Image 1 (cartoon, chains in turn yellow, brown):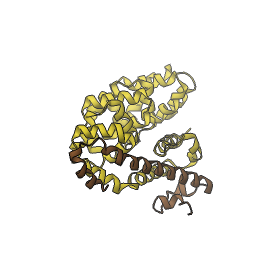
Image 2 (cartoon, chains in turn green, cyan; image 1 turned 45 degrees about the horizontal axis):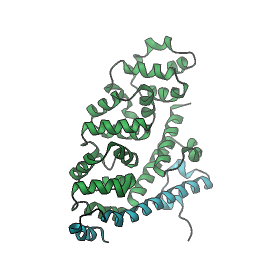
Image 3 (spheres, helix red, strand yellow; image 1 turned 120 degrees about the vertical axis):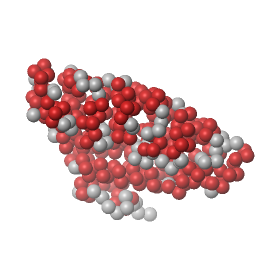
Image 4 (cartoon, one colour; image 1 turned 30 degrees about the vertical axis):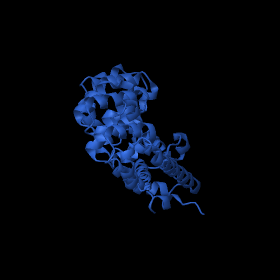
Length: 249
Length: 69
């Protein structure tokens, strides 16, 4: 499979999430260029976020006069994750952060899954570290790699570093596979301890399902970082070794 | 009323690779998007009134005014 196919596969997973349909239903999109799929997904996201813009704006205005504690209760008991995600980008940043601090990590994880990080970046980057780590833990427990991957580009580096410490190697490979901005992969790998890249490749060697995410990750690494893997090639199982070798040469 | 096409729902423009899909495939995407919009509109409509029940009585007038209820 080529890097292009990997990217299309990841895009289909993300589009299925936005539309709330099973990925298998969108199988026919596998032959579409990944850049076109990403552009289409962003169009769909914008359309859904703008669809009820006037009503959402009015709700965001109303949120200004309601005490934060009451807002948090309404958010969790009435609005639910979908509407909270739609409104998050419209409320005052400090108020949004205050409400988020009062919500449970489990609920915030559900909101995160529905959120468009591009629209709520200011709030996301101000959420306290402990809360981010708790939400990342919830998302990892649910194996929600897409949501974890979507937030990597919107959190400060020290927060990303701490969050990734708590994520195991197979999970990290799956997150990297669906990362929104693959150009960030090399930077993110650079935030990990030096030995972790080798560990990721070793983890992939033990599970054929991880070959595709691992090879995709390697295609996005800098030459210098790829070169650090050469000494471990001999220890990889046949089949995987040749593909890693072809990818990092 | 005729169903809106995918391009109609997205403001008239489709990326090349999506434009090149078979008609029935574009229709499937149009249906999925329409259903997602309907689910969202329904959730929003239900949340407006229901949310007011949690707002302290003294503030309800101001909130009703803000949301246009």
